[in-house]
Length: 70
Image (cartoon, rainbow, N blue to C red; front, side):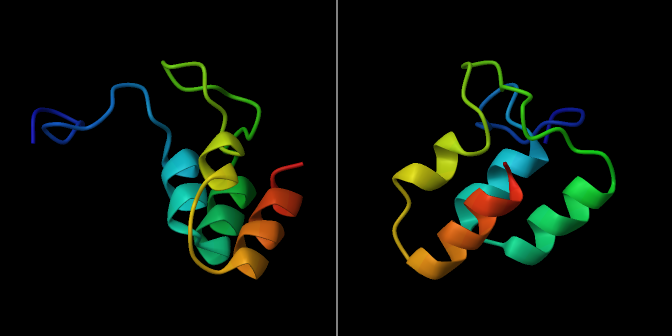
């Protein structure tokens, strides 16, 4: 770790983008309830919804998360 950022972490990634990518509706809801902005891009210009488009895993969870991020 270096400061607030893990070594090798993509600079500018938001907690919301990680929660979306990992397919965690509960964490996405928690972050949104505490003010996370689903429209905020990371330093690469990607939004949280971009991270769920190509993820593998439970498609139903991805759909729930995509709906939450609208």
